[in-house]
Amino acid sequence: MVKLNGTTVENGSDVTWVPDSDENELTVKVTGDDGDTTYTVTLTSTYEPVANTLSALVIGAAPGLTLTPEFDPDVTSYTATTSNQSNKVTATPTSEDALIEIHVGETEIENESSASWAEGENTLTIAVTGDAGEKTYTVVVTRET
Image (tube, rainbow, N blue to C red; front, side, top):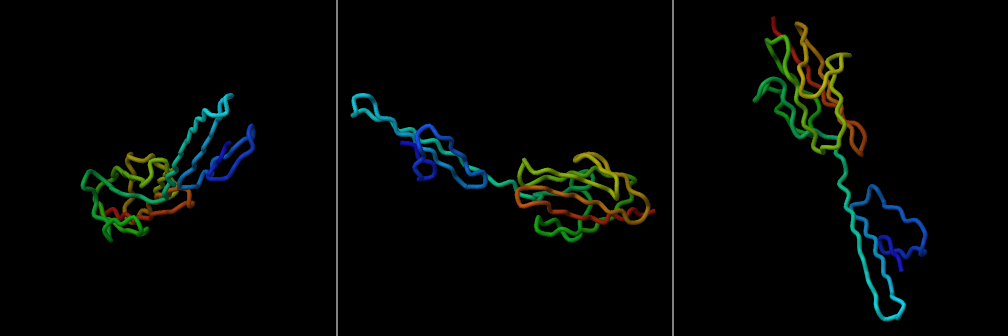
């Protein structure tokens, strides 16, 4: 007998894990030739969804530029001011498997590398992609003269 998540599956057929399920359980029960000896094996797989949020955002050397408002994973728009020509941008995703894309204007930069600022306002975007799609954080960084 073979069961996947409580449903009997025909012996010898393929079974498919449900990728977005919190838990998958595969149970295989084997009865020996004597009809009395049985072995039951249960395999359990858990799935943690990939979140499309940041757990932290730091611009510049720690503690970084002051973000207004203070960073909150649910808030997506911020402002900051700097007198530097560049600052390191570190975006920490909530899920380590999330994909992150960072741009200053149209220029893509790598996470944990420096962004260059022109005088005046610069738009920094951090797009985080997870199972629920993409979420974009925006920081308008003003470089003072």
